[in-house]
Length: 167
Figure 1 (spheres, rainbow, N blue to C red):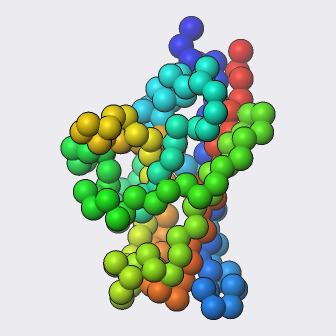
Figure 2: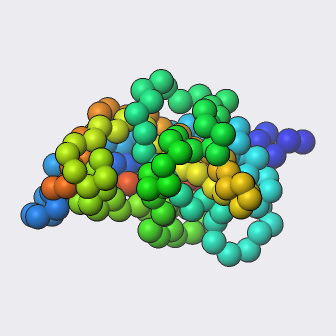
């Protein structure tokens, strides 16, 4: 029996836009995301691994094409763009039985290299496949309404992944 036939995996991404001076939440969007086939393969490989989850990076992008399970990176290194500055580390994660929550805070300095506005409408959870050359795989992807990021805004992304045994 195939792992994906016995474990159901769901993801929900919450994106908050927060005023960096007042802390007021200006916008909040919640939506179910797509766990990609490559993400399911990662689960199969790491099901017996101990320690931190292998998903360690988040990247924002501008592709508005709705996510599907067969999505794969369009760049040779597996990222949305080839600029290393676009890789955002997962700030924290928590694991409880059947659920993992990844959290990423994107501070005021992250927006077009700290100047001007940048518009984002996709996010990808990523994991490192190899060191030499450095390549990444996609775990999950979510498209959303345009989010404008500038130096006066903070983005808070909370990505909840749940696992349910179907056997």
